[in-house]
Image (cartoon, rainbow over all chains, first blue to last red; front, side, top):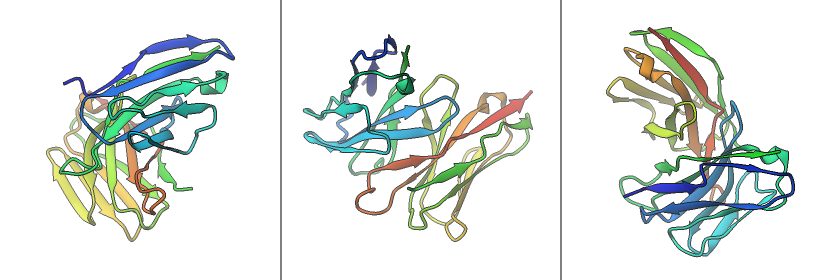
Length: 115
Length: 114
């Protein structure tokens, strides 16, 4: 049981390049989230999904896109990377119901630098 | 815009002392409150959650909630150097549009000195 797996762990991009951050979960959770965390700051919600085929914007969605074709996968796409997107990105999942609902489980994060 | 405010610290306490971490939130209708611990370079991990006014204890940790004052705190008794980390406060948005969204504070860095 791997939980929430994020790849890659580290990446350096040049300005204007694109990339996809991968997030896969084996917890069968309906809710999935993407956050970014800038140095010394809290987590800012980028996008979230309540189930396969359903996504919505969070607080800071500009410059990002997501898709949710399966329960397990929730990739985050960066188009035309900018230095302002240098951050640590966390994927998280949450159960829809049950004793552990409202508890978010985080992946290990992807550290991204845009130079 | 829902806001969650924390003192960034660092908060320094000697080993064995009580560490008190505080958090205020702007949305009076918030119902669920969480404390996460984040070690440097690692992902957040849940320490405690609290839904009702009053205190909730779990081992060395006590969460305190005062909805009238829109205030939630975390007490760590018998602080250990291994408790040195950043502690994030989070609340869940209350209205239908924000139902599934967590709002995080910027965190308080705790240093426990041996």
